[in-house]
Image (cartoon, rainbow, N blue to C red; front, top):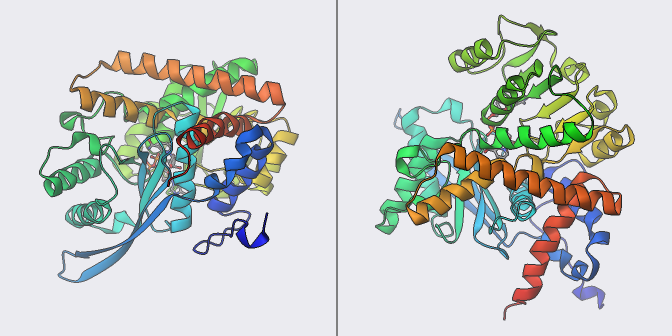
Length: 429
Ligand code: NAD
């Protein structure tokens, strides 16, 4: 090939080995040898299809005007409309949102949902805003990204620091701007607005279901198993609750308010009440406080990172005591750490399958909104479990066949679906 025509690196990001987009690119490099003739199309995975950066000015309660930077990235739309959450966090960057959008492409294809991958975010600490300011920011952001979202185009959902109320404001703003009642434009909505039963706990449930399957293959009995959880928000708390119901002991937890440990396992009802009242696990009376770094030395069977990216570094991977890591968060393990965990025989169920329960029930919500016919929570959970178990089995078979990690196997299954769609559609024009 003429070198002048070989793919040029993207000009607007500068990934490093440990940054989210750099991590994702390395994961793509690892899967290419398993893509056969589809490897010809692999470069499409290394580039987001569309990136939108928006300015969000809002009037604060004190009369001043504040500006926030917002993003919506559609990584790949070969298999269907974009789908992925919206994150409010002071550290959000375009590069992070690009990686999160790309992981959504992989995840949606891994569980065979008819979606492409997308993600959004605002660089803001929402805890510093009043409720009214939060609403104004959400509405302006929705209006700004309104040119690329829609029930058939790109469907946002909750992620870190966003919730059903924020989805309700997004749905209302989009509906006002289009003169419709567009329930299908976002998922993770309140039940009265076309939300789905089971959505709030779906991601944690998927972590539990894939974890239960992995534990079975490791001959690890969940009854009495010791579990450590980083992040006690939507994902971490729901997963912890289900593990506790299965007889596991939740022995350590960490969030932005602190780290706690109790060798005999937490009383989950007390811990949940404490988090509801105080906003975090720090200061929980039924546990001992722990130094943040010591959390990674906790003696446990299962570790559930369910907070942010890049938490399991190479240094922490060398110290982990767990037999099984369940990635509730997106991108919690750096590539160097992944290799160390594999060498140490610690099994990792990767984010792109482990936390796919949320988007799976989001898909159910979207389908229910279109058909205006709603399912019971039991129906949701039965269908969710079936999809997660079936997807994990296919991934496990692929891993066994090629002797590769579950992460590379998930990428192999997903990329084959994405790139087959790419090839069958052909290039336009
Ligand atoms: P959340 O806002 O409900 O909870 C986030 C948790 O992370 C909180 O407990 C917070 O205290 C903790 N946290 C934040 N910064 C931290 C730090 N520096 N150290 C330790 N803990 C910290 O968010 P969530 O929806 O539970 O999302 C958590 C992770 O799961 C994210 O990676 C998200 O992308 C991923 N995820 C979420 C969903 C979903 O449906 N909500 C679906 C798939 C993946």
